[in-house]
Picture 1 (cartoon, one colour):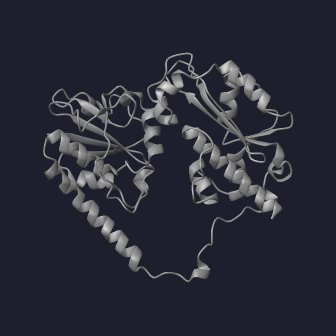
Picture 2 (cartoon, one colour):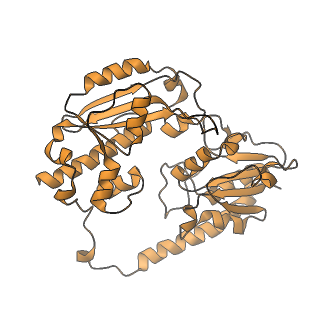
Amino acid sequence: MTRVVILQHPRERDMPIGTARMTTLSVANASLRVGMTWTRDELGDVLDDPARPAILLAPGPDARDILTDPPTGPVTLIVVDGTWAQARSLLNRNPLLQTLPRYAFVTPEPSHYRIRREPKPEYVSTIEAVMHVLGALEGDPAIARSLLDPLNAMVDAQLHCQATAPRRSSYRRPSGPKPPAPSRVPPAIANRFGDVVCVVGEANAWAYTRGKPRHDELVHWVAHRPNTGETFERIMAPSGELSPNTPFHIELDEARLLTGGARADMLAEFAGFLRPNDVVCAWGHYQHSLFVANGGAPFAEPLDLRAAAQRIANRKIGTLEAFAATVTPTPPAPFALGRAGRRLAMLVEIVRAWHRAIVT
């Protein structure tokens, strides 16, 4: 019989509706553990069971399709629970998990979790993922589908509550994202919008190893000038070995990365793209540090949009994706490939919204 161990991100535990908890209540041999990092000793009972060797359910370029090519014999199925960003964070923080045989699958049907919007149509909730996998491992998909009963009941109840709950008068409903106070908009965006350049960089990053300095190798660099619409994009081949997790995280396939150009050429071309008075905007300090660590000249006027967003909102603002949703509920069209292209479009929408608060 398959053993199921769910490793849950601590923030996901605070969600009022948890399909991970629902899974442990519905599957006889399932358990839930909450945390960010685990040692070999803490997971010894999971990883060192010779009768049921551990496998990891997580997408990745080296993952085998568990529905068409399942492992033989009993296994311990380790499932990472959380948002997709939280799941990636857990995997990055736990190199121990990355050494396990990795499996994934393409869902054969749409998700039943209709009250929560998944990033992509093929993504499913934790209980649905376990249902599909147990059907393949135990050889009886029909019995495994009984896991959908509590999920469907919960979803139907939530939708019924939403449909029957009394609605507030329309005048009390917010009409849309609240524009920032003009006095809090960064002066560079308010007065020098023509000099603003938004940038996003992606790295070939390996998990941190104790005693060894971490070096993130720049492999994708994108930029956009909101005032003119000019876009810069370059993909650079890694000089060392490509981390197996990099293509998944930055959403670029391995072949495209390995055939990228030279980093020195990108740096020279980007220097030509910039103007002497440009204000280079990024989310946090990492982009600037990554650029300089890979041979780029320090930006004359860097602007941290995350710090600016915190001042404008007067609170912690979370991820770029979360803050961008408060500015424009509809995700903007990407300016370039991969995750960097999507995030670049978000940065541009943010600075445009702040500029509009000044000029309108």
